[in-house]
Length: 149
Image (cartoon, rainbow, N blue to C red; front, side, top):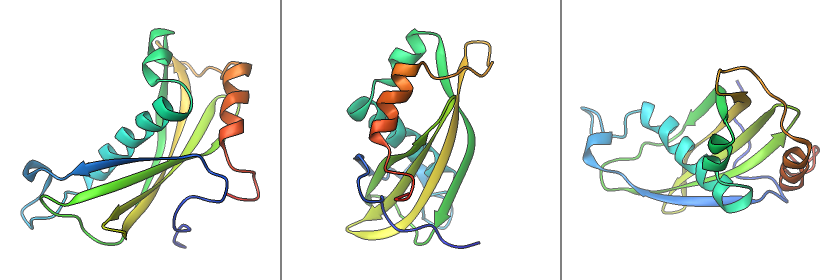
C-alpha cells in the first residue's frame, strides 16, 4: 500500500493539538500502544471542529453525531512516555452526509505517522442523515480543492 503524502495539502485549514504522553498510554515495550493513536485522532478532530467549523457538542445538542466509518493510521516511528507530540488535523472533504479528515503526528518536528478518518452524519438512532446545506457549504469552503488533496 502506498504511503500517504506527508502533511496537509496546500490550502488546508489546519489545527494542531499538543499531547504529553502519560505512562498509562504505553505498553510493555515502553512505547505508546497503537490503539491510542485512534484516540489522538479523535481529540484532534473535535478540536479542529471547535476551531474551524462549529463545536461538535452543537451537533450533539441538535441530535446528530459523526459516526466513524473508517480509520487508517500509518505508524512510522514510536512515541514514548513523556514525549510531547503534536497532532495536526485538516478536513480532506465534505460530501452529502460524510466528511474525511487527514492527520499528521510529529514529535519535535519529526514525523511519527499520519492518518485518515471518515465519518457519516447520523441521527440519535444511528440513521444516516444528509448534512444541512448551510453546514455542507461551510465545510466545503474549509476543504482543499479536489486536485490538492
